[in-house]
Each structure stands twice: as C-alpha cells, then as structure tokens.
Image (cartoon, rainbow, N blue to C red; front, top):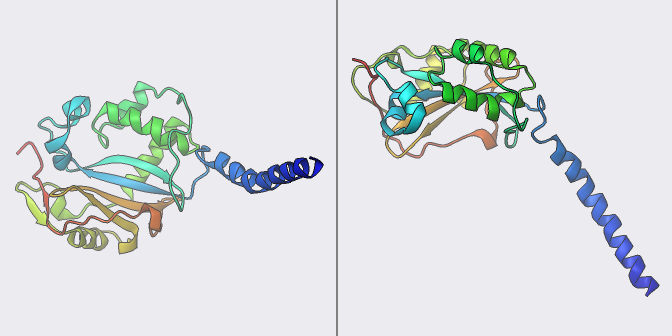
Length: 221
C-alpha cells in the first residue's frame, strides 16, 4: 500500500516537472507586448469588395477608389501569434478610429483590429495606431497597383517582385501572398518591432497555391 502511495506521489512530482514549465510558457502567450515581430497586412480592396458582406462591405465598398488598404498590423511570435490579449479590451475612442479611416476605410475593421491585435502590442490605442500609420509609410506600393482601371492578371511571384523593386531593402523572404482560388487578396509584409523589413518566420508564411490570379480594378472609374 505504501509502495503504491509513493508511486502515485512520484507520478505527480514528475508530471509537475513536465507540465509546470509548459504552463509557465503558456502564460506568456497573449501577454501584451510579448511578441517578436509584426506582419503588416495590405488588403486588395477590390477583391474584398467582390465577396464581402455586412457592415464592413457597406463602409469600404462604395465609389471611392480604394486599392491596397491596411487590413492590420499583427504582432507575431516566431511560431504562432497572440490574439485578444485583453478581454474585454479597453474601449477605442471614436476620435482615434476616425483618424485611421484614410488607411483602414471601415470603422468596424478598426475596432476589430484593436480588440484582436492592437491589445497584444503592449501600446496604448493612440500609440498602436500611430505605429500602424508608420508601418504603412515604410511600404511603397508599386506604381502598377496604385489605380488600375482594368483587371490585372498576375502571379504571386510577379506581385512579390514588384514590391521588392519598389522598396529598397525589402527581400522576397519578407513577403507572403494571400489569395483565394482566383483573386489576390492580400500582400503581407514582415517587419521588425522597429518597423524594419525582415524575413517572415516559417510559421507565418502563407503559400498562395494559385499561379494565375486576378486583381479586380479599382472601383469608382
């Protein structure tokens, strides 16, 4: 009986040694400010507007000629990413939201990005959205994608090469392309915490499998 009791105690001690450090590591997940780099996600608005529904579509998909817009600036780990780091999130003021509409043309998107990603930055809402603006300013959109009046047929490699040519210091390893079966949806660019171009981690790379993509024309022509 004593032997069995000691075996049980030994089992829990060993389990504690194994599980304890993992639990400590898990507690670091979703801790505000604890991340390795950012992804700046640039959404091709005409593709979004072809399939979007609901309030975000109503807000973004009018006659204004949006091309690439900011989807978000997302803190990342080298493996995985944090999300919803404050529940409930601190309330985002309408003043800050309104100040971002030139880059992120949908109030619902801005509120969502603060709740799901901005809270993980460790920054105040004001500082986070200033960082979003600064990150966007680091990336130059290739001239051919500024205001196309007809649909473009592209491959992921062509889009990546165009961004590399337009941005000094940007490498192919710092860009990933997100698509659906027929459309280019997003260009995602990896940035250091200081907002310098850096290669994406293996876990943050998305492979667009289609080699023949459409970029619908900018609306409002």
